[in-house]
Amino acid sequence: MSISEKRPDHSSLSPRKRQAIFRATHRGTREMDILLGGFVEHRIHGFSDADMDDLEHLMEAPDWDIYKWVTGTLPVPGNYDTSLFQRWVAYQMRKSKQQHIL
Image (cartoon, rainbow, N blue to C red; front, side, top):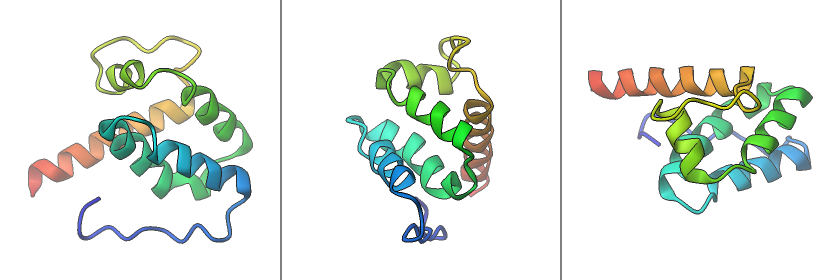
């Protein structure tokens, strides 16, 4: 997280969403904690129930597979290539461009 980013207030979120934040930020690899956790922490307030289903399904996959999918190293299997996943990829691309500007 950059210095200019503030952690959102998650106190009003449902237990399901708070648990998803914890799971996304405690993946087992630091890379995924940062990549997936950062996206979830900053966007979860707008997630629908369908998005939550997709997120929970995604978090069942091995970290290194997810990492390779989001970085474009491997193609994303159809059952993971959801609207939520595409928004995550777009989020990562925007963050990457911002870091190159700094």
